[in-house]
Length: 576
Image (tube, rainbow, N blue to C red; front, side, top):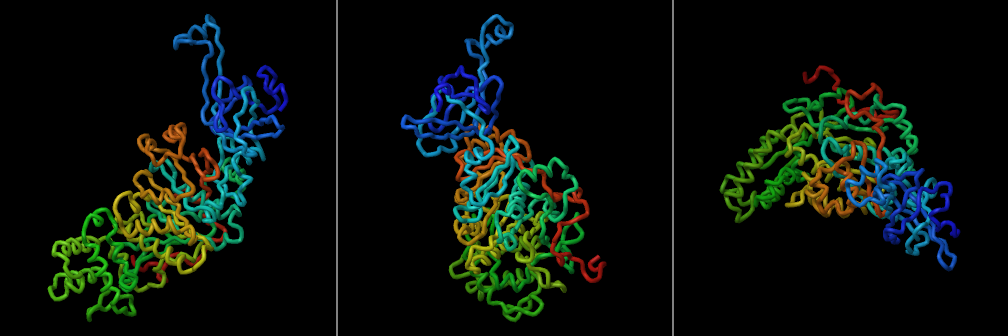
């Protein structure tokens, strides 16, 4: 380093924005920079400086601006500002920025010396500061405040070194689901997955409205400025190329027509036959909410599920149990009720030494599920060929559950998630990857209690990395989600947070300044943390290139939308 670099009076070199100040302690991990009069620094700017050691070794320190301040030098009292502005008291405005170190090369942790010139890091130097040069495959995750691309290391998404994404934020403002789908779009269209892209799958649960039912349609509101933002990220804007959409059938409809309001084609129904419900032991997923957790009928649930597994399937999807033919879910519930209320069979169906109160509570909850689930568990549909949730037919499978009661939502999430998990276990290999996007994670994996779905999500969080099943979970409040699910997420993201929620310990990875910022950031802005980078980064992601509601569609779909998913019967008036 030249001698004049230590002299604050020396004119700044090209690209220099300021110098390390000497009135604040400078450490290897953080320091303050005085900003030159003709320059400025803002939050999230990336900077760099050099220091030459006595032995001649050159050390490069990279950092990110965490805080910026301005104040009067020469003022003692708050009221002095009026005298200074009136020219009656001499003072000078001082502007400075606090920098948090992101990288030191080589790793010789020495503090920068006061007076050292500080420059904005651009190009390759910015990439080194943010560890982009250490990433074998980069996944575009948004644009920084200065319009530069920000990347996530694919190895922390695909299970190579870490897995899972957790997104928190206020409902309707934080754009959690939109950012989750943007990450999927980036993975599928950036080339980060290489040759594995074609076989990689995504399962998305649509829990609110019908926003995710148009992923295969171009967004008519995407303007040229937003297209340019995709270009900065190396992405070609457009809809998802291969999308399959399934929805529950309309209650009371003998033809199982999908219950959707804004989309008339390209949607298939899903339900389970009585035989599948019995043989696959799906009964426990009917008892997966907080009220069930407080009861003592777990033994009854598993004993009844075991007896139902012994049922004899029939050709129409029904079963025969002890000589009685069952084709409707209500009939199955009534049969279970009869066996549990018969002194001769109750011990065999409920288990020995089970009290009458426990059996009664189980029966009441079972009957309470009939109205909400009888259109999802049935054997009375003539056209049954399209009813399963096929996770392999398309690259992206959207399971619409927004019209369902909470209990039915839990049942569908639990059963489909178990299907995906078991398929990955049976494959014996992590590739191709299976991504799962699930909002309202606090409902399915709450902090307190246990349930079949929570245990399944814990299994995904803890073993999914090795199996190739990756969870992209979202919730309003991370403080209400099981700790192990959040802790196993390598990538953590927050959008707009509630002020009280932002103070919780679950957000300890956020610096104080960014906690404050999280309460005011706008939709489309996220704070992203990844293991390689010691500080979270604020990023903005482009407006969705795919339609998020019917009003945004332009009548066209993606270039290779998979045909054959339209739930139109041979007779177009069938079911009306």
